[in-house]
Image (cartoon, rainbow, N blue to C red; front, side, top):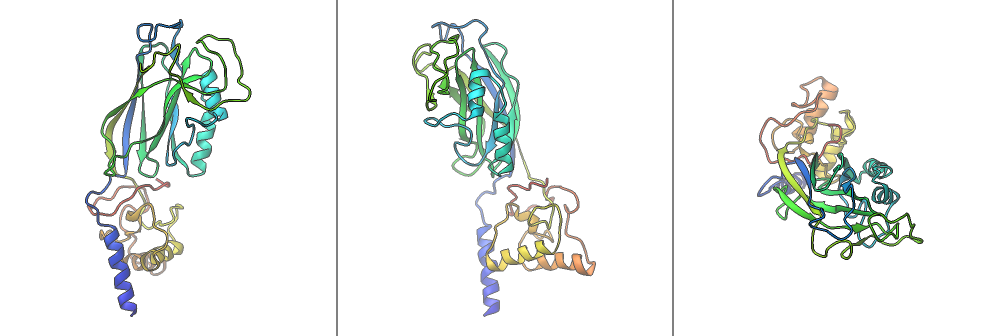
Length: 309
């Protein structure tokens, strides 16, 4: 009975690891902001000194993390849309990172004049595959462009190739000015974020584009044997591997990390190898072990993220 249970558990685990295509774990993108906003495209009251504030945003895993149409603007979105400031939006993103809801900040200088172009590079992984990026339309009361919760993973689970998104104006709902250079008129109470499709914006005419350019797909670095990703390899890791193998508990983000002997398979030899190293002075886990690195042998095991690396 016990042997049958162990065999069944291992077989189930191996079936879960079979994929028609193994998703690469991280990808480097370049975001290019091309502004076409000009007197030619939007002639109504086009302002002098037209420009955009610095791009600010994040990679994250939950939709509507920083802003959403129909919802009230956060203090960070309000200040970005009214003043072009990245604070406190940057702090809101840092808080989301600390809570495990976001992966990284995306930030770049703005466009000193429009039309124009600016670029920023960032890295995304499949644990935080969504992107939100915004920039103030300046001068304006509280208008901005941006994307919200845009996924960089396609329907097949792969990172998207280069693609483009048209940008239109959004109203943060915090200032009631109706022209680019209106005096401050705080909206009380604040209104929900909404699209701007009438004057001074021509309906259906974009202000520019975000182009997401896939630069490189890279393999996630990790340390072998560190199941709980706390920077240490100890008895608790061996116990967690055993529980995962035979009790079906806690599916790790980095399956490669618990393939202690680098066999390309997860089985009882992995916790035995780790325990033998810890208590009998036997061979250490296979590389990469003491330092972060990539798996130098090909197998079907995945590693979506490893925060210690």
